[in-house]
Length: 243
Image (cartoon, rainbow, N blue to C red; front, side):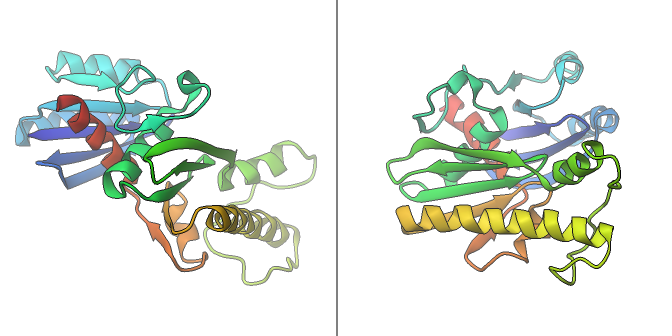
């Protein structure tokens, strides 16, 4: 069986090709290029099932995939999930968070797992040893913090963050902003992890998302960085519903 798991965002698309449950190919790029990539895939693989985790407007992409003859499902609150859900408003739970918890369920059944997704927002999602999703937290991501400082003030510039600040003490406006945003988000993540560890030991911690690799080397040991964790979860949902 060949499955295609698609993470469809506001500006970028990432997909993973799974053959017999194994991730054999990944691709990421802008929305316009994604259609051409899907056409190329069909020349290489006979794709049995496609599932999309969409946080952007994927309607046009879904229509394209259906016209290309693909069997496609868009992940939603109505999708059957491979874990119990104790979230009070499951209909408002982000589909990306559903997929991440599914990944935790697949790889770490019967364990306490905290999944941290460092993307546009930083999301924290917790599954307990009874394989029940309990909820988590949402906070602004790195890019959002830099944009907020620029857009909600009159004098602060828009700053990028290609590297870690050398010093906590910023010596100019840009380095002070980098220090505040980056050291601040690291302290937040460490603080959240500390709380979960004090309440749920032993704890498995997964770090993923667009800024996951950038942050992982700055965090303490004991964290597993996996940039494809959401895709793994999506594929597991496909297999769970097929079974």
